Image (cartoon, rainbow, N blue to C red):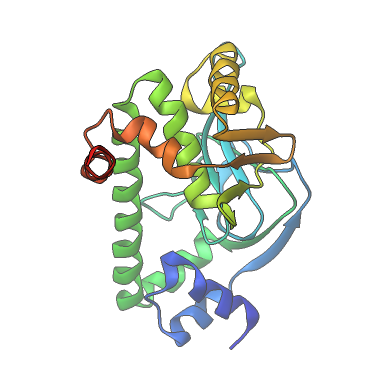
Length: 244
């Protein structure tokens, strides 16, 4: 089995594929290595390929009418983008940019479409996998939008810690060099509000931020700041233990 084929099968989207199915797709992929802050494609470009993150980090964003960047997502190893429900060419609504040096596998849409047309079983499996991923993202977005402003900021830090963090003892290190402005653009804060939130969390000894990323010293304490407000069963049980 080729390296690309083995890598594809390690991605969540492709874990249900057989070795032969993964090998078929791997033969169509084109490896790409991009430096930090390089655009994979820009808002308004025709999407000609789908991409899989082999290593590194991707940021998707768009520019509003005032020229401000609005960040939509961060994509790590194993993630696919752009996430689309169809495989014909379309115009991208976002810009995809590398945050750090990033390795990608590019899969031309037209070629992939031909592969799916010749393999109904593979096409059905791919549609099921993609539908599941879309539903997962929609659920996250709905939950995110229902939160208040401060809770959105804390919830996003928790999301980054759980999906991108590396445990080092009791701490969780998140090696994403995200600025206060980028965090504000992601969660809909003003930059000043983000700075106040991070300053408050730093004084409490929960989160420390640097140019290389940030460190969550106490992930459970960070979770409780939003979970208790939402009457989370896990946090209610914690409160009961402490009160007892």
